[in-house]
Image (cartoon, rainbow, N blue to C red; front, side):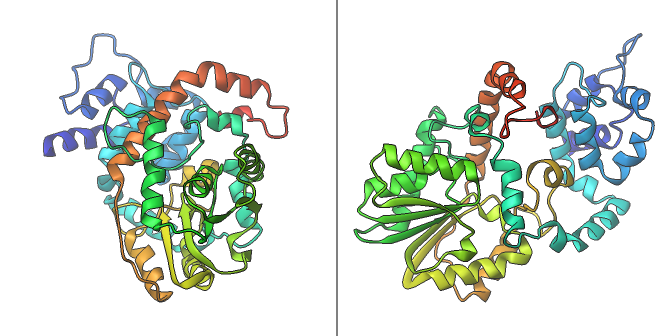
Length: 372
């Protein structure tokens, strides 16, 4: 392992001077191949030809500027892929962060964390719209039929994405300990599949809230089509404006958009909404390292205001709200499998589906070319 990481580390720090062939060899744990008589263009040559200032930008903010260079075509890979490059980067992320100047830069970035993750009422909806209101057709390119945009639960490696997502719904329902007559709140209800599932397997009343206009419309259409509108409803509403009391609260894939500075506010609201004998299930992406910040590229282009927390950040806020943690389950490997399914589906649909969406960019909800 040490040899593999060491080779990868050389490839990462020296990425601007290594050929792509050497990068792929390093990623796979083998020694870089000897350069041929006429070596392929290196990443350094390709970037330097198009933007000589990229070296400095990559040094001071590699995650942002490497992503932007790939987006605009100044960073390309021969005989390999973006996935290979990201794998190599992931293998060496901790080593990169340990570099003295990088440690200083990251410490400065953490000082702006509160501003980077600011999600007050109003701005939170704008941040959500940036990602989730690209149009439902875009998400159909890679999600399952129910459009669940969160980690699936695989009981077997051979299961389809649809089956694994159904497993996840059953797992959540079991953990919620459903009983007839319960009032349930789904915070960040997405495209509605979880709320509809809970309403179909038990005599419960479910309210889902979302800040995405696209999700809100489709969710209510699905509830009507399933004849569940009498006990499953969806509202375009910030969770902080929800009123009433609930026996169960569930939130899947929404907590990443709360922001650390709002954690106390989030769990205080949960406590206020829960009945005294109530139960909440929170499903979120997290990370294994100490508290940090979101990737600047993800923050700028994908999830403005978002952050995947460390457990220490979540549990501290839970304790401050006088809530009990009675169960913790880590789905790390399950998410890796889910992402692999999403990647394969997107790759399979990329040529036709994405190009059709780009062609329809004049639509108010269509993708712009810079987004694809």
